[in-house]
Image (cartoon, rainbow, N blue to C red; front, side, top):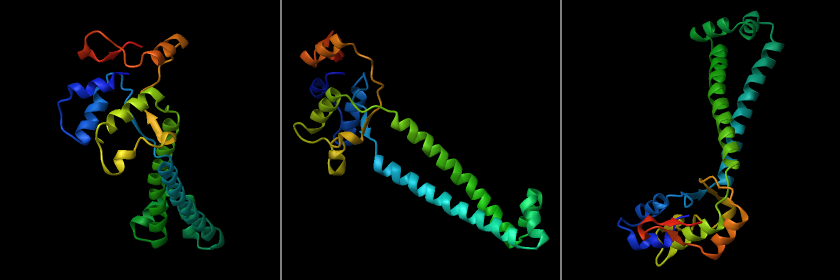
Amino acid sequence: MNDIQNFAETKDHSQGFAEASWLLASDVDSESFIFRRFNRLSARNILYLQCELLALEERLEKFDRVVDRNIDTSLQEFARKWERLLAQSNEGEPRAVNMIAAVRELRVKLREYHETLKLQSERVAMHPPERRALEATRNWLEQPLPVLGGRSRHFLEDETDLVSLKVPAEADFLSKRLRACWPGQVMGSPASHRVLF
């Protein structure tokens, strides 16, 4: 990871979110791209989407039960022929209108639900930040005065709810040991801010 502490000496930018975003963007290794996962909110969102689909499922099943118990042949025709259902809906037949509305809502909600599940699956596979990168980013954002205020000031506190956008490199044992012994050692000129290990 870049030597974040050295960044403070060369910064030439605004304060607050502009300063925080400058820090994240200045790390050429992208190890400081650490953000909240929002695990609870993600789960809650999926639960809400699931509830909407459960309600739609119930509406469709209710329609099926009405068809099964009814001797009205036009209603039974709705259940068998899509074209007939669509034509009756276009003519304003209330049951057909409601059924078409439910089908169209189902398509939208089901797509949203499946896309959300897929995104959540990808997000779950993402890695937490490395301890070194997290501590360096925390220190920079907090010293000497907090860069961010309000709720944003504490977004790095819950380590179980953080994700790093950088894919971790498979480091060998020697590299890890050297990094632990000499954190922040840079190679080349000071302006490069490149970490040796």
